[in-house]
Image (tube, rainbow, N blue to C red):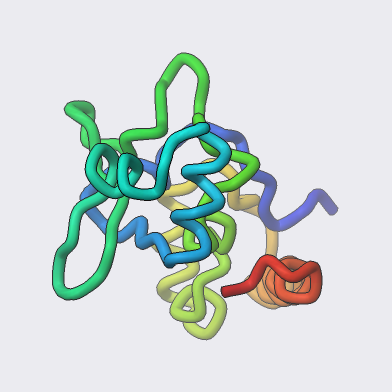
Length: 135
């Protein structure tokens, strides 16, 4: 069987004013990657909403760093919330939420079982955590 999830870099998950939150350590890492100061990153690419810091969306409705022609401009330093997709707790714990995500995301294998998806998600999240990237 193929992986339950394999990112297709399509950007479906990058669209919408949802919640690409960015933490302090992520802000600094992304700013370094862009070769700009943290202050400039905050000013040009972020907004505060509900006492949280979010990456802005562009005119297309996608994350400001996503371009249809090239994909994610910060892929190697993307925030944890982006790395975690689609392995969010609500999707891992609830098969209905998983089916909804499966309909929206072309990277989620249509033929896999929820249990297989959960196993892959747990492994990916643990690998991320143990590699020191978890916030």
